[in-house]
Length: 186
Image (cartoon, rainbow, N blue to C red):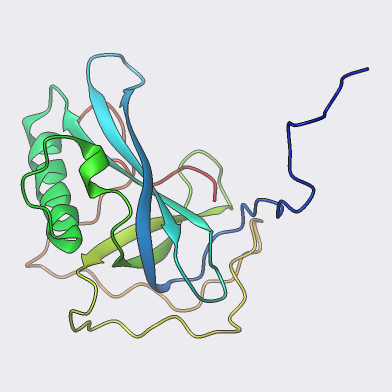
């Protein structure tokens, strides 16, 4: 038998791993860490963000920035994305990732198919918005159920046709230079 005294709070809420519905959420960074790429020839900076209010308060969203990679293109993309995050937080030149923590800002989240689990969905941050800045994406409506994590998950609308002026979206993170998507369960 194992003594459990002091290892949990009886009032703790169960962790939800359901995918958040697509929408705009107010979040703050709760944790960050450098992690090695699968191949071991680079590393990425991972941020854990927590939803601050509303129906999905305390739910987590993750994003990764492939800032140390042999692929110059992967690093270029990651640096641009990281610049967007820093701008949203309002700290353009942090010396440590901890400086970006506990500042409220907004993220536009979309739902994408998982690369590692066919038929399941994952959240991906589409855009960072400085809190209070005008947004062009509608706020998530309360009462909308999150996507189910099964092969029969609903697809609310077809993706827009690709533009000849925009590069195709990245299809997930690998060590060959593709920017990472958020394939971490939520």
